Image 1 (tube, rainbow, N blue to C red):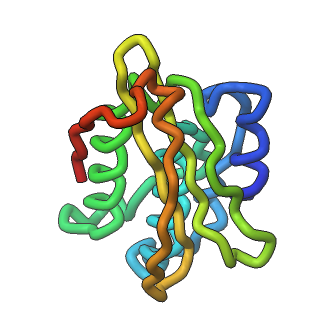
Image 2: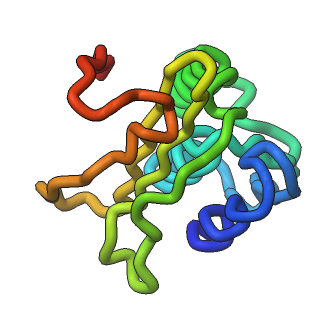
Length: 151
Protein backbone atom coordinates (compact mmCIF):
# COMPACT_ATOMS: atom_id res chain seq x y z
CA UNK A 1 0.00 0.00 0.00
CA UNK A 2 2.80 2.44 0.88
CA UNK A 3 4.62 1.89 -2.39
CA UNK A 4 1.36 2.20 -4.32
CA UNK A 5 0.64 5.58 -2.71
CA UNK A 6 4.23 6.76 -3.27
CA UNK A 7 4.54 5.49 -6.86
CA UNK A 8 1.05 6.70 -7.78
CA UNK A 9 2.06 10.30 -7.15
CA UNK A 10 4.59 10.28 -9.99
CA UNK A 11 1.75 10.91 -12.43
CA UNK A 12 -0.97 12.46 -10.26
CA UNK A 13 -1.33 14.63 -7.15
CA UNK A 14 -1.59 12.93 -3.75
CA UNK A 15 -5.20 14.06 -3.44
CA UNK A 16 -6.22 12.39 -6.68
CA UNK A 17 -7.11 8.75 -6.93
CA UNK A 18 -8.90 6.41 -4.61
CA UNK A 19 -7.70 4.35 -1.68
CA UNK A 20 -9.92 2.49 0.75
CA UNK A 21 -9.57 2.47 4.51
CA UNK A 22 -11.43 -0.64 5.62
CA UNK A 23 -12.59 0.14 9.15
CA UNK A 24 -15.25 -2.56 8.85
CA UNK A 25 -12.43 -5.12 9.23
CA UNK A 26 -11.37 -3.72 12.61
CA UNK A 27 -13.13 -5.63 15.40
CA UNK A 28 -14.10 -3.79 18.60
CA UNK A 29 -12.69 -2.47 20.83
CA UNK A 30 -10.88 -0.15 18.43
CA UNK A 31 -8.46 1.02 21.14
CA UNK A 32 -6.89 -2.46 20.92
CA UNK A 33 -5.86 -1.62 17.34
CA UNK A 34 -4.58 1.91 18.01
CA UNK A 35 -1.07 1.28 16.64
CA UNK A 36 -2.31 -0.12 13.33
CA UNK A 37 -4.97 2.56 12.89
CA UNK A 38 -2.53 5.37 13.68
CA UNK A 39 0.06 3.94 11.28
CA UNK A 40 -2.57 3.95 8.54
CA UNK A 41 -3.84 7.45 9.40
CA UNK A 42 -0.28 8.79 9.47
CA UNK A 43 0.44 7.06 6.19
CA UNK A 44 -2.59 8.45 4.36
CA UNK A 45 -3.10 11.88 5.90
CA UNK A 46 0.61 12.59 6.38
CA UNK A 47 1.11 12.08 2.65
CA UNK A 48 -1.86 14.26 1.78
CA UNK A 49 -4.16 11.48 0.60
CA UNK A 50 -7.71 11.42 1.91
CA UNK A 51 -8.98 7.85 1.60
CA UNK A 52 -12.55 6.61 1.44
CA UNK A 53 -13.41 5.29 4.90
CA UNK A 54 -15.65 2.23 4.91
CA UNK A 55 -17.18 0.93 8.07
CA UNK A 56 -19.74 1.94 10.62
CA UNK A 57 -17.50 3.80 13.06
CA UNK A 58 -14.18 5.66 13.12
CA UNK A 59 -13.93 4.99 16.85
CA UNK A 60 -15.97 3.30 19.57
CA UNK A 61 -19.10 5.43 19.87
CA UNK A 62 -19.74 4.74 23.54
CA UNK A 63 -16.33 5.99 24.66
CA UNK A 64 -15.79 9.75 24.97
CA UNK A 65 -12.17 9.27 26.10
CA UNK A 66 -11.23 6.86 23.33
CA UNK A 67 -7.57 7.01 22.33
CA UNK A 68 -8.65 6.23 18.77
CA UNK A 69 -10.96 9.27 18.81
CA UNK A 70 -8.05 11.45 20.00
CA UNK A 71 -5.80 9.95 17.30
CA UNK A 72 -8.33 10.82 14.56
CA UNK A 73 -8.60 14.35 15.95
CA UNK A 74 -4.81 14.73 15.88
CA UNK A 75 -4.37 13.52 12.28
CA UNK A 76 -7.41 15.40 10.99
CA UNK A 77 -6.09 18.63 12.55
CA UNK A 78 -2.66 17.91 10.99
CA UNK A 79 -4.20 17.47 7.55
CA UNK A 80 -6.35 20.60 7.84
CA UNK A 81 -3.39 22.70 9.04
CA UNK A 82 -1.10 21.66 6.18
CA UNK A 83 -3.73 20.98 3.50
CA UNK A 84 -2.57 23.72 1.11
CA UNK A 85 1.01 22.43 0.94
CA UNK A 86 -0.03 18.75 1.01
CA UNK A 87 -2.14 19.42 -2.09
CA UNK A 88 0.89 20.94 -3.87
CA UNK A 89 3.38 19.09 -6.06
CA UNK A 90 5.25 16.17 -4.55
CA UNK A 91 8.96 15.57 -5.08
CA UNK A 92 9.98 11.96 -4.52
CA UNK A 93 13.10 11.79 -2.37
CA UNK A 94 13.27 8.23 -0.98
CA UNK A 95 10.99 5.39 -2.06
CA UNK A 96 9.68 3.01 0.61
CA UNK A 97 11.60 -0.25 0.59
CA UNK A 98 10.07 -3.54 -0.47
CA UNK A 99 10.50 -4.96 3.03
CA UNK A 100 10.07 -1.66 4.88
CA UNK A 101 13.81 -1.12 5.09
CA UNK A 102 13.87 2.45 3.81
CA UNK A 103 12.53 5.70 5.20
CA UNK A 104 9.91 7.00 2.82
CA UNK A 105 10.52 10.68 2.13
CA UNK A 106 8.30 12.97 0.09
CA UNK A 107 8.78 16.71 -0.22
CA UNK A 108 5.63 18.67 -1.00
CA UNK A 109 6.58 21.98 -2.62
CA UNK A 110 4.99 25.25 -3.65
CA UNK A 111 7.52 27.31 -5.58
CA UNK A 112 5.28 30.41 -5.69
CA UNK A 113 5.05 30.54 -1.90
CA UNK A 114 8.64 29.32 -1.37
CA UNK A 115 7.21 26.66 0.90
CA UNK A 116 7.95 22.98 1.39
CA UNK A 117 6.70 20.20 3.63
CA UNK A 118 8.85 17.12 4.14
CA UNK A 119 6.97 13.97 5.05
CA UNK A 120 9.08 11.18 6.55
CA UNK A 121 7.43 7.80 7.09
CA UNK A 122 9.16 4.99 8.95
CA UNK A 123 6.78 2.11 9.79
CA UNK A 124 8.94 0.52 12.47
CA UNK A 125 9.07 0.86 16.24
CA UNK A 126 12.87 1.00 16.08
CA UNK A 127 14.55 4.42 15.89
CA UNK A 128 16.79 5.14 12.94
CA UNK A 129 19.19 7.97 12.20
CA UNK A 130 19.92 8.73 8.57
CA UNK A 131 20.87 11.93 6.73
CA UNK A 132 18.41 12.95 4.02
CA UNK A 133 19.10 15.57 1.37
CA UNK A 134 16.01 17.57 0.51
CA UNK A 135 15.94 19.21 -2.96
CA UNK A 136 14.73 22.65 -1.86
CA UNK A 137 15.37 23.90 -5.40
CA UNK A 138 11.82 22.80 -6.25
CA UNK A 139 10.42 25.10 -3.57
CA UNK A 140 12.24 28.01 -5.25
CA UNK A 141 14.83 28.15 -2.46
CA UNK A 142 18.26 28.97 -3.82
CA UNK A 143 21.47 27.30 -2.66
CA UNK A 144 22.84 29.02 0.45
CA UNK A 145 19.48 30.57 1.41
CA UNK A 146 18.27 30.55 4.98
CA UNK A 147 15.08 28.60 5.63
CA UNK A 148 12.75 28.44 8.62
CA UNK A 149 12.26 24.94 9.98
CA UNK A 150 9.11 23.93 11.88
CA UNK A 151 9.15 20.66 13.70
